[in-house]
Length: 68
Figure 1 (cartoon, one colour):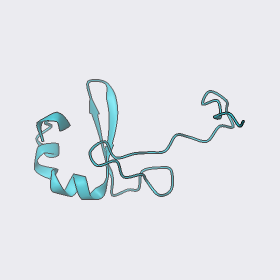
Figure 2 (figure 1 turned 180 degrees about the vertical axis):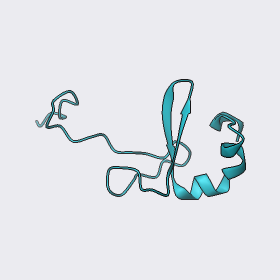
Figure 3 (figure 1 turned 90 degrees about the vertical axis):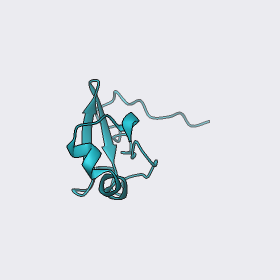
Figure 4 (figure 1 turned 120 degrees about the horizontal axis):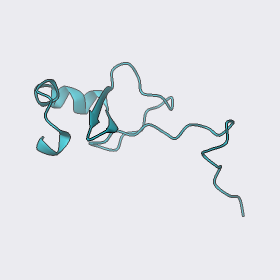
C-alpha cells in the first residue's frame, strides 16, 4: 500500500493551496496573483479571487474571515 509522502522531505511536493472560504484549490499548487492572503491569529489564510472580490470591503477593513 503506498504511503503519503513525508512533508518534511526536501523533495516532497508542497501541499495544495486551498481557499479558506469556499475550498477551491489553486490550479498550479501556488496561489495565483489574483488570490488574497490574510494572516489571522498568526495563521496564513488564502482566498480565491471570487471570495476575495465578494468580501473585499471586509478584507480591506481587516475583519477576520469569521466576521464575513
